[in-house]
Length: 117
Image (cartoon, helix red, strand yellow):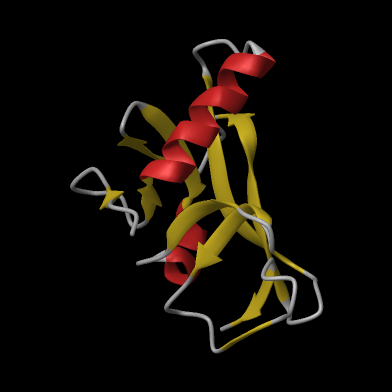
C-alpha cells in the first residue's frame, strides 16, 4: 500500500510512486526551476471533465503548493473539483500510468481520465 504525503495547505496528495515517477519525468525533460506540475480540470471527455496533468510555468490565478519538493500549480477555481484527490502511479501488467482517485467525482469513465462532479 502506498503512503500519501502532502504539504499542510495542498488540497491533493501524491503517493510515493507518483512522486518518484514525476521526479524522473522532470529530470528527463531537463526543465528549468520555474516549471512545476500543473494539476487541473477542463471540460470534455466522455464523463464531462478531463484531468490536466503536466509540467508548466505558473500563471496568473494559480495557487502554488509543494509536495515533497515538487512544485504544484493549480488554478484556484479548480480546487473545488480536486480537493481531497490522490494521484498515484501504477506500473503493473493491467495498467501503467497516473491514476486519479477523486472523492468529488460522482461518476468516472472507463479510462479513468474523465469524470463528472
